[in-house]
Length: 227
Image (cartoon, rainbow, N blue to C red; front, side, top):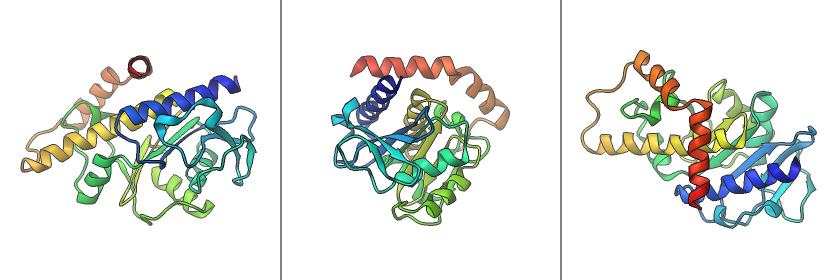
């Protein structure tokens, strides 16, 4: 089971690279350790495109590397504190997704003007504004988790995104779709801003029709096949 989980985290990293969410050696994916010891997390100093199962290390809740030869990322509290606050979360993704970073700085609301934003709104997507710096302490990680609340993602203003889900496939696809949602909104803002978008009722209906667990898994499988 652990070997399969590490393979899933590594695959998620490579999918995020394919989706243009790589940022040199920065960004990370983690999965909850089924034995409760912490999180299985991408190691530092490697790009998303390089990650194999051997590069996925076990990091304790306190940041100690319990398994693996590589170093951990300093921002491990993004993962440990969100999973500590949310027992339903099995995977956390943090990237510096470029369209999302740009969109967050506009302070514009995320409008459901295409399919992708309906995975996030309504309600309005969470925004973490306490700091745009690195999340290197448990206190900042807990504050980020509080900002996310029960949502599936947040824009980390001046920094990046965080996405979460019950498993690796769901969390990674959530990150993929958030970046696409922000890209659609940014393109519309560049054209003068949206004039129409789905109301809440239609957005929620589209969420159910487009982004069921089965559909998200099918999209994950497609991206995996393309690697």
